[in-house]
Image (tube, rainbow, N blue to C red; front, side):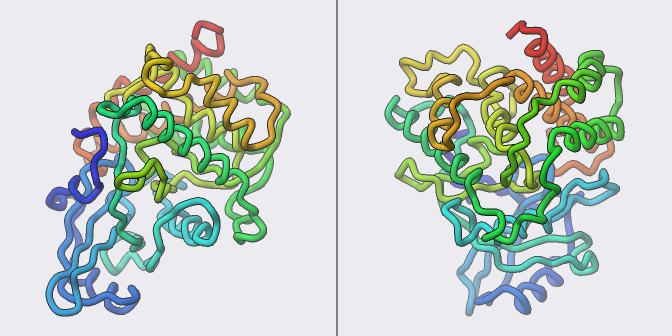
Length: 357
């Protein structure tokens, strides 16, 4: 796959497991999507492991437009997962801020329409970078892309929660305590094997939470692949995939954003062993320093806790993806390849805790 691919080229026929009544969807769009007209056709985006995403195109009289739909996956779902209503709400609330998000058209919370809840948003034409090493770019371009990703994250963490009406989007305070408990529960619900490093982390993390209790909007899955850039400029035009967003701790977001400095997977790539000086990609300490400067921090203590927590959380998510693959209701046919990912991530996290990075 190309390292910079417009999302519109990554579509396939709707997978059998994700089919729904497209006529019901068209009727909903006519009633609730401003400016909708023409005849609807639906295809499915190939990527994504959680909420299935679809390209909607209209043709004929009144048509000629594109939209994107995100819906819950079919089948029995883990508690508190796949909350498309929360994705819709946070992006709609951020529309008037300096955090780039697509325009939100409509949310449908009635599962009778197509079988699950869903929302319709603007289709944007830009670049999605699939490889964190940004091959085929020169060092200046790579540096600019990473600096923009850093700047947008800093802006997100500076959003006024009261002004956007998002103060009740999550429970402020005690973020790590609540999140560790949540991901332990999610892991247990999807567990298929014994992973000793996960057990070590489950015991260690709750006892080593740093005293800092900052709050901000936390995206929860902030990485290069979940953003879209202008077709020719190093300017981000959208932050995508907000399913895990909440009121959280900004350093959890930053650590998650920096995980590829410590690990790699076939799906996400890696920044381990990258020659930062020659590539233009910032080293982890430089990326962190840029974020600290933008957010007024003198530095970050307990960095390995934040990193270990992020890796543990991703390990739990990966186990959930793997379990859905075994159960046959994952949004990607590659889900069953995640069997060893949880173990790898947990091992990496526990190594950081023990100072073996």
